[in-house]
Length: 206
Image (cartoon, rainbow, N blue to C red; front, side, top):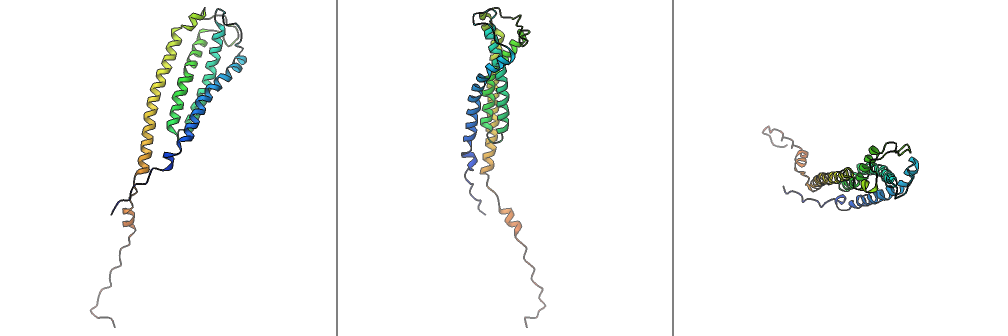
């Protein structure tokens, strides 16, 4: 019995990637804009205003970077939630959202954590001590540079892992869509056995 020809790729493989692409651009670009817009309200909420660009210690830059890290943390959590919700339909774009959000926002989060550990009383409005006496010492802090580099490396590793996982899932989906359906067993099973002929007694029909 000849096998039926495989059907063409279903429409969800060819056409449904556009919504995932649109969500990806909205989350990544919108996340950058949202983090920027939330910085000023966060500074007002925690009382982080004060000082000028030329002050020493450089509280002007320290407080702004600290607020930026808080905003980046919120945006990262929101992006991860959206990526998790859309992973079932668009795993490729959801994976890109995860690692790009980590690379864009993770460095700010790491720097904000270092600032929090290095400036006791920052959230209390005291700002008494700081490990950076000048702007140049703050700008060239090796710990901040190392933390940002580590985040970038982690983002690249995560991107590679998610790319492999997404390719594998897409491969399995296409294989299932192209696999022909074997109906020979069903047809053979549906055939009913023919009834046995009645035994002959040697007499013909009347």
